[in-house]
Length: 74
Image (cartoon, rainbow, N blue to C red):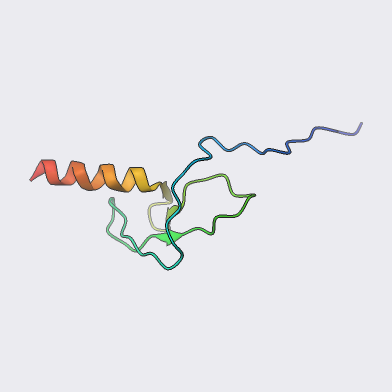
């Protein structure tokens, strides 16, 4: 039996992530290692930032919130 399902639009949970300019560098708020900026391709449905050691994705909003939270702890 053949499966004829088509997901033309994909499954993007939040398609309006703000994508930083190529070459932008940020550090992980969890482990302080350099984050990898993922290329914004039409077939990619995750967040723009990836932490290799933590195996965690971050959006620009996540990074801003983490920075704000860390300042409030001081």
